[in-house]
Image (tube, rainbow, N blue to C red; front, side, top):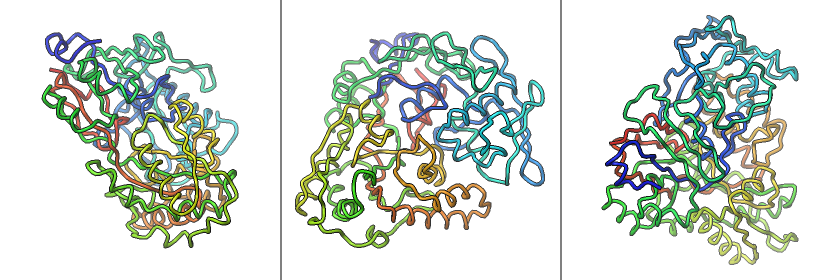
Length: 484
């Protein structure tokens, strides 16, 4: 691998960005983890684009307009091509957005405001190419979210002739993004810049799988150029700083949850588990990290953030340990030191209340399988934001979307959640955000724990510019970076 020192001497060498997950998923319509989202952002483009700080700009779209009744959006594409030289057309947009619904991507629930989205015949979805450059999207009712959702990597534009055709991403696949795949391995994704814009962006990049326990030594050895999503001890951070590494803000809106599966744990058990937790004690053990207590599902500084000081105010009274008959086990990701600390602290708090809970540290691939397949009775989860609005998080509680791993099943709440995009009055919508968080918490299937992260946010001195990315690594496009 290439060291940071070598790269500063020879900019043609690849920069190496470490992530803890292998087998990255580059299909934008079946994304589940932030590492795959980050990789997907590099090889695909959407109609609009989020900047690392969460602001929006046009991407593949040149111009757009909306009708007076705000139900018909008209778009014109700019002149861009896939990596094999094929022009990106309105037909590609139509088929890609229809595939998003065909694959039941999690964002499809958020975008149910598109006309005919409820129909089984996906071909009727009201996204229509008018000619090579122009297309329109028709809505059931006006919403403020269409442009927001079209900027997500879930809405990436693919080279498709039909939405239901087989689509597999390899090094030979024609892609719309700023980077082309050179080689796609289980533990490494090799990328090459298509040189579409920023001349100082890294030309060659390797996104490499690195176990959390190996990140520090490999960074110090000069084999890595970013350990953004890894927690590091103070001594390692100081040593890297001497080597020219710099810390950048990252993933400040991530949230840690405790999820209890109602199919495996009775309500009385869930009540006891949730009410026995004093997260302020856990915070004391996380000193020096960027964490704050979570009372709801919308992070601080965003409208709709809950500031209640007592989580128990709206979830009822504490259960009795004597009523618990199940053997309780808590699963968590072995790749996360923070999850390990939280799990051990919760175990001790429950033990002090008379309940023995077994801990299971799961390898990352097994962990994701347990989380998304809802195999665990009790599991710790971390979720970032897909876009900077509270609805981004609340949409994950709609029960009829397979990719939503929170075990909330309430048809009345589903209706209210699905109506949120149609509320055009900002004050009323934010009030609904607050009320829905409380109603969802009353289901007693999940417990908000902490906002923030213990990631180092560190990048080597090979980079002259790394934008701050408080929304998370999944918002950081490599073509926004500059190498020396």
